[in-house]
Image (cartoon, rainbow, N blue to C red; front, side, top):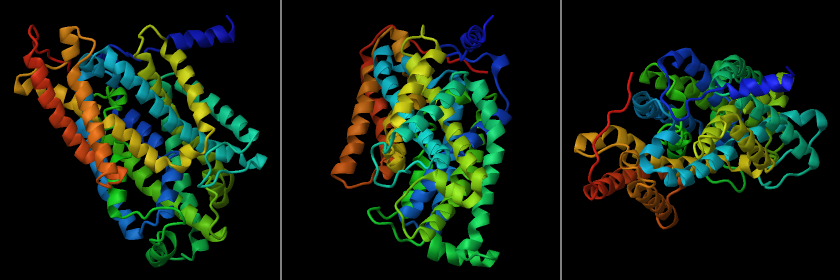
Amino acid sequence: MSSTQNLKQRLEAVNEYERTPIPKNKLKGWKSFIGTYAGEHTAGTEFVIGPLFVAHGATAGDLVSGLLVGNILAILSWAFFTGKVAMKTRTTLYYQLEKIAGNRFTLVYNVVNAALFCFLAGAMIAVSATAVGIPFNLAMPSLTDIYPSSVGWIVTVFGIGAITTFVAMFGFNVISKFANIAAPWMIMIFIAAAVGVLPRLGITSFSDFWPVAETTIWNGVPLEGQSKFTFWHIMFFAWFCNMGMHIGMADMSLLRYAKKWTYGFSSGTGMFLGHFIAWMASGILYSLFLLESKGSLVFAPGPIAYEAAGIAGAVCVVIAGWTTANPTLYRAGLAIQSINPKWKTWKVTLFVGLVTTIAACFPALVMQLLEFVALYGLVLMPLGAVIFMDVFVLPKIGLVSNYAELTKSHFNPAVGITWIVSLIFCLGLNIWGGIEIFFLGLPGWFVAVIVYLLSSKIIQKKTTNVSPTIPLTY
């Protein structure tokens, strides 16, 4: 048997239980989730987000307090929202939403969902490419770049994209193993690189750190063309930068493998090793880069890490991009595959990998990452509210869950109304209320909850021959 045939057989054998609950013998222990969350959230985005806090003029006090509060709220959201729903249903977000909303609605939603995940994974492939391009002296993107700057950049991105897609095609097991191997090493590189450059910033003792942090690293002065960030920006961003994954329920696809809902607290490894330590560490590296380059607008995580930690820093950027892009591509593949269950997940992942790689050629994805992750979470948030209320609240107020499945309907109007009204409300707050995108998720969630409950009550009152179902539990 040829190696190509053997590879195809292995891919065909991958079963991700896209339309059935996870069997008991396939459930995983806490170590799988600790490694996955640490690997995914101590990753490529951290080399972008940490420096952007510096660029937006956050103060040291606002950064530390904002990250502390925001990350705790994010962990609680993963456990009490996503973990509990995943435990109750044991299904992917996409299949659960189909049972609630109908396949016509989920067709639209899944395409939007997959596109957003592709763009996020693309940003991480671009981050890795900034490190791979160092030996070839590739022109690196700046804060104002939108389009690819050279053929060399495109070739590098496609090479990274091919490797990332190949790993994602093998499913959750391989992704989890990859993250468990990479995460501990990456975390140490982040810490070692930041500690190693402290003397170059004038920090030679523990007592020196905070004064220098306030005056040199996070001095409260935004770079030219960048808006000013406060405690509230940082707190809400730390909470909602992964809103699509916890409150938006995308991580049902991962946590459905958990033996207990409390494994949602495993996200703490990602939040505090990645979204606290790594964001601060990468901010330290970027502040040194700005100091020694006299305010250059070049914004390339690869060279920044290489200047601080040499080859190890550059390799860390490459691996970090992979560990975020891999599970993100996996989610995008599940979203598209759910449109037609006959499609093989690995083939769909191959397709979304190509789309992702093309998107990664455009540096604007990286430069606008803060705004993009806030937008993608906001778009997915109303459907997370729908799923949570459908699973836990509707049966308690005399309404049925999984309305589309029970009525054999292709479309549940209550879900469509909720999505549209919530997004229009958030858009109105942004345009006419002047509220920045980082703050829209919280009021938007409550609007989604109210609209879904009211519209479900009206629609189900007009429907007969439906009865509650009891979701599968363990």
